[in-house]
Length: 405
Ligand SMILES: Nc1ncnc2c1ncn2[C@@H]1O[C@H](COP(=O)(O)OP(=O)(O)OP(=O)(O)O)[C@@H](O)[C@H]1O
Ligand SMILES: [Mg+2]
Image (tube, rainbow, N blue to C red; front, side, top):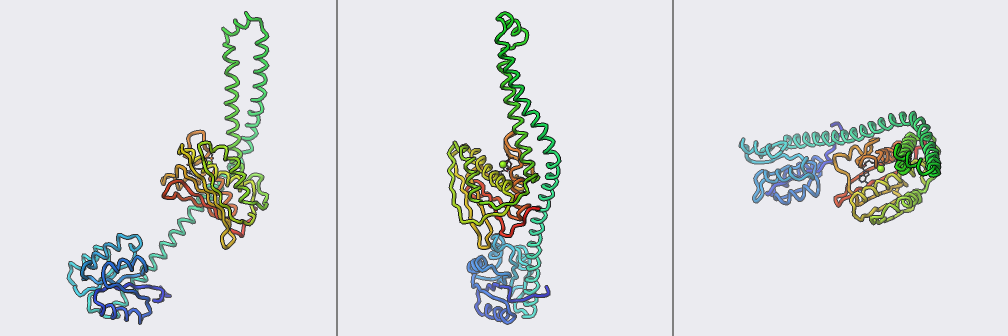
């Protein structure tokens, strides 16, 4: 580590003999380290958890709680688990050394020690810790970037495909939907004509073709075909939004108003008793593609309604908006619904991933949200499952917005 500066590090020294603390403390002070002290095991645990030192120099022999017990408890606490511990002791028995490493010490120095040796070891372990911390932060960043890239790649692949097929499917579907209406009229006309036939012919035709049943059942068949066609229409529309077909126009949008409009559409669904709690902050208008953003916020709220309904109990949806100091717009949508099982959390933004019963979800809702918030506006879309149940989605839209190309 080229720019090693002892001032950036805090060392906790633990010893029941205050004279020892003074000696080691003076040595570290002189070198420029920050220091903190403890004179017994319990105090050491408290200081380690509160001050979060970068390294601990721990006396082996102490009354009440010895160094081994302290080290063991440090390793058990997530806050101090990775803090390196160097044992300081007058004993150089092999058994003690082995025990020290067994409870997770990184090094072992026997008293009386040479100050140069101790300082060299302290520095080495601090450098190692620093390198390890930097590596794990870099690794986390890399993972996050990788997830984002994979997600964007998936979305852009699907977007291209959607653009290609949405139009074709829509044409064919419009054809079906339009003709279903005509077919309904023809069948009605046929039914009326049938009624005008003489009774004996009706009976004869009925016996041969079950015309009564056909007249009664065909409207149901047509209605179910209409529902199917409407569903195709809604899937294709979602796909088109997702692929941003014809929606690139950028305007200023009032987010609070948009949330209200979406809630207005969804509120009639809350028959089982869904309480809506709104806490809106003062927001600047958002520069975006309004249709896409409206759809994204609607999708988040719709999922919240679905999740509460799935509990079959009355519930609550809290919608909060606020502006951060850097003018970023934040939206939180929290529901008391069924929550998201940990094993599916990484997949919810995948296009076509749905956990809903067959026929109820297309699995494109959150993919559209991701597109509108993250890909188009460089915003953030996070999801968490609070301990007291339900789900919270948090949207963050930065002030400096990239306009759509
Ligand atoms: N608020 C929520 N609570 C619980 N689960 C959720 C919530 N939001 C999303 N999910 C889960 O994420 C999955 C994907 O959501 P998404 O909105 O993309 O699709 P969908 O709701 O299943 O279908 P669509 O929105 O197309 O009708 C859902 O099936 C659901 O399992
Ligand atoms: Mg949805």
